[in-house]
Image 1 (cartoon, one colour):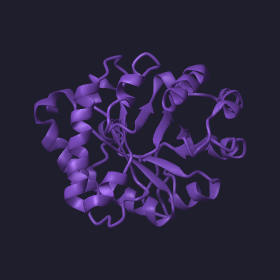
Image 2 (cartoon, helix red, strand yellow; image 1 turned 180 degrees about the horizontal axis):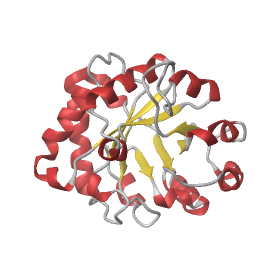
Image 3 (tube, one colour; image 1 turned 135 degrees about the vertical axis):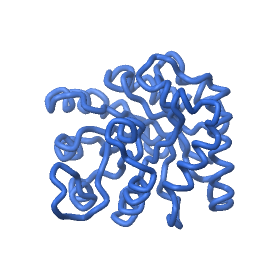
Image 4 (cartoon, one colour; image 1 turned 180 degrees about the vertical axis):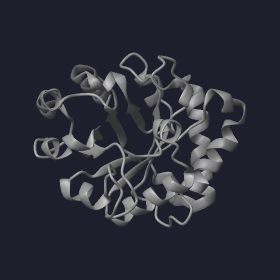
Length: 246
């Protein structure tokens, strides 16, 4: 049985003091990691100070990384450096990286392979824009196959399904629509990797809040949530984590 995963994506929010206040507030309220995996992904400059203060049942993740170990790539973040901070997870292929910074599936593929090679757990995001909604199945199929090209072991990967039109808009996908998309993602993974796909956690992201998270978690193929705005509030984050073990 797959364990639920609740992931906070802070994006470009929180100062160092605000981030530490959040961690101190939630640490003792996180359930046992055997019941639910809880992850907070923060800006790179905050990672080490958060890892040093994460509780036994909370893990810190990065929001992005480059695929080279070192070199003349000003402003980029090496997987080697990420690993040295003590983080376990890294978000790759988020729609904001795709749309604002023009990251291609081919570049994301290189990042996924680099993360795995360095013992990091990729949170690979896929999803359709509003303009692609009629072709969502094909769009997601293409993204998965290109981003996972040459990846032989998906045991460490979490897939995040994020309909781009629902991110930060307050418009979440209906739970049944999300379940349908995610069940199709699992079928694609099954076609690519066989039965191991049943062990891969697939989470939903897109305007998730304490008000709607239970509707998603009740679906059989949705294994958790990747949460933006609502996860900036420590009380809301705790509430959504606890919803995963009800």
